[in-house]
Amino acid sequence: MKKLFLSIFLLMTVFSVSLFAQKSNVSKANNLIMQEKPDFKAARAAIKQAFEHEKTKNDPKTYYTAGMIGYQENETYIKRAALGQTIDQVKKGNAIKESYGYFLKAYDLDQLPNKKGKIRPKYSRRIKDNLKEYYNSSWNLITWGAHLFDNKDYKGAFEAFQIFLDIPKHPVMNNEISMTDSTYRMIKYYSGLAATNMKDSKKAIAIYEDLKDDNYETKNVYQLLSDEYRNIQDTAKYLATLEEGFQLYNDEPWFLQNIINHYIYTDKIKEASKYLDRAIAQAPNVPQYYYVKGNVEERLGNIDVAQKAFDKALELQPDMADAHAGIGRLIFNEAVEILKAADQIRDNRLYNAEVEKANEIFKKSQPYFEKAVELNPKEVDYKQALKMLYYRLGMTEKYDEITKEIDSM
Image (tube, rainbow, N blue to C red; front, side):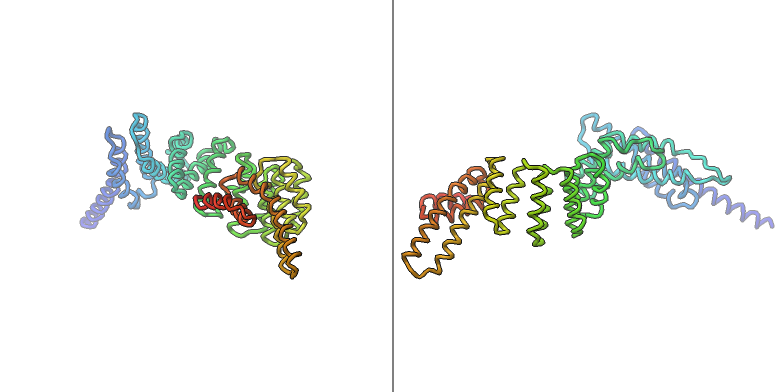
């Protein structure tokens, strides 16, 4: 009986020593980060052992202390930056990320009822204050995310921005942080851009859909959202988003042009023409609409209507290079059709007369292409058209000159 009692006593002693050792590791980790020269590596080694022990692995103090390691490390980086020292933004951000995860775990454990069934949180207030600091100080999550974004680590930037966006939603905050201010909306927008650059359309779509009513970069949001729907080949939502964007910004040609391109690509040219007429009725002074109408009517073979549309575009915007080139193309193609018909003529005199007629029409297109090149000298298609025209008209000197320009581009 005495031996049994002794064995139980020894077992209890070993257990108590083991438990004390693990709790000691938590205290050790805390002491290591609070000393004058913190040893974060040793602190992490100490807390790791506490994670693995049955009696401390579910203790909120363990995870709160683990969170404080990253928190204090981040503080050292902030102090160095304040002294003008160059710091590693990635390591600083990773310290925040690490501590954030541990703080969330500590909060969850802190909300569990004790043996008496009562919830008596010990660390929630301090966790709340630390998370608020991460959120409110721009040199924390925002600077970290911006650094990653600028360095094209879009996955990392997305993660940093998501932490920022999730903090106000956490129960510990008790809805005390507004999610409608401009900073919150800005970070949400950039998290969407990060998702786009990650080529994660699912995440990007969710963010942009949420942003549509936030009144932040709304026009860009609709453009980005429609592109994402196109990426996943959701044609119905792609077109619906374009049309919704067009209703909000009917003076923005981008939406209309993409709608028209969609109809053209799906070989629905008549629908494209009808949509253009509707757009022009709503916004009759947008020159780009008339330019697009000119192209569509040309596709439908309505050359006179196309010419009038290009003319109207130039009336509204005289320096529109595309419209000058559009008129030049209509005239050029008229001459081409005459030459095609002439190929069927067997009478040389009549054939030569038709060729001369075509050349006179070719000459009429020349000033339009030249004006287009003058207005937009970087557009190679204009110069290629002019090159063909000079060759056709036997203008050798100008042909050689434009050829050199094209070869040097």
